[in-house]
Image 1 (tube, rainbow, N blue to C red):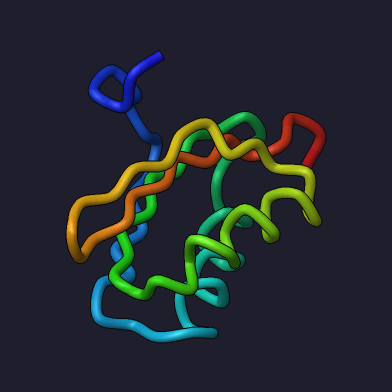
Image 2: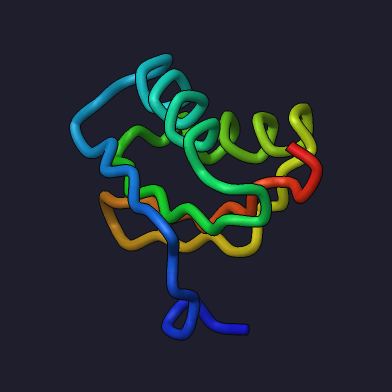
Length: 83
Protein backbone atom coordinates (compact mmCIF):
# COMPACT_ATOMS: atom_id res chain seq x y z
CA UNK A 1 0.00 0.00 0.00
CA UNK A 2 1.53 3.32 -1.01
CA UNK A 3 1.02 6.62 0.71
CA UNK A 4 -0.56 7.98 -2.49
CA UNK A 5 -3.66 5.81 -2.06
CA UNK A 6 -4.09 6.27 1.70
CA UNK A 7 -7.10 8.52 2.23
CA UNK A 8 -7.00 9.90 5.78
CA UNK A 9 -10.12 10.62 7.80
CA UNK A 10 -8.33 13.65 9.25
CA UNK A 11 -5.00 15.49 8.97
CA UNK A 12 -2.85 16.90 11.76
CA UNK A 13 -0.53 19.65 10.55
CA UNK A 14 2.19 20.00 13.18
CA UNK A 15 4.65 21.87 10.96
CA UNK A 16 6.79 24.35 12.87
CA UNK A 17 6.04 22.76 16.24
CA UNK A 18 8.72 21.26 18.46
CA UNK A 19 8.64 18.39 20.94
CA UNK A 20 6.43 17.77 22.87
CA UNK A 21 3.76 19.73 20.96
CA UNK A 22 3.31 17.37 17.97
CA UNK A 23 2.69 14.39 20.27
CA UNK A 24 0.34 16.37 22.51
CA UNK A 25 -1.70 17.42 19.47
CA UNK A 26 -1.58 13.87 18.11
CA UNK A 27 -2.97 12.51 21.37
CA UNK A 28 -5.93 14.91 21.22
CA UNK A 29 -6.56 14.45 17.49
CA UNK A 30 -6.55 10.65 17.55
CA UNK A 31 -8.95 10.65 20.49
CA UNK A 32 -11.51 12.39 18.24
CA UNK A 33 -11.16 9.87 15.40
CA UNK A 34 -13.55 6.94 15.14
CA UNK A 35 -12.12 3.50 15.92
CA UNK A 36 -10.18 2.29 12.88
CA UNK A 37 -9.91 5.85 11.52
CA UNK A 38 -6.84 6.94 9.57
CA UNK A 39 -4.90 10.06 10.56
CA UNK A 40 -2.19 11.72 8.46
CA UNK A 41 0.40 13.76 10.37
CA UNK A 42 2.66 16.36 8.78
CA UNK A 43 5.57 17.47 10.96
CA UNK A 44 8.91 19.25 10.71
CA UNK A 45 10.42 18.22 14.05
CA UNK A 46 12.94 15.38 13.50
CA UNK A 47 12.15 13.99 16.96
CA UNK A 48 8.78 12.81 15.59
CA UNK A 49 10.73 10.01 13.87
CA UNK A 50 11.32 8.58 17.33
CA UNK A 51 8.24 9.82 19.17
CA UNK A 52 5.42 8.87 16.80
CA UNK A 53 6.39 5.17 16.47
CA UNK A 54 6.74 4.99 20.28
CA UNK A 55 3.34 6.68 20.70
CA UNK A 56 1.75 4.12 18.36
CA UNK A 57 3.42 1.18 20.04
CA UNK A 58 2.52 2.32 23.55
CA UNK A 59 -1.14 3.08 22.76
CA UNK A 60 -1.55 0.17 20.31
CA UNK A 61 -2.34 2.26 17.24
CA UNK A 62 -0.96 1.08 13.90
CA UNK A 63 1.70 3.13 12.11
CA UNK A 64 0.63 2.32 8.54
CA UNK A 65 3.31 4.32 6.72
CA UNK A 66 5.88 7.03 7.18
CA UNK A 67 7.83 9.08 4.69
CA UNK A 68 9.90 12.24 4.60
CA UNK A 69 11.54 14.73 2.31
CA UNK A 70 14.39 17.03 3.34
CA UNK A 71 12.50 18.97 6.02
CA UNK A 72 9.06 17.41 6.42
CA UNK A 73 7.93 14.10 7.93
CA UNK A 74 4.69 12.35 7.05
CA UNK A 75 2.95 9.62 9.07
CA UNK A 76 -0.27 7.64 8.59
CA UNK A 77 -1.73 6.16 11.78
CA UNK A 78 -4.70 3.82 12.02
CA UNK A 79 -6.49 4.23 15.34
CA UNK A 80 -6.93 0.94 17.16
CA UNK A 81 -10.29 -0.67 16.52
CA UNK A 82 -11.34 -1.13 20.15
CA UNK A 83 -11.09 2.45 21.37
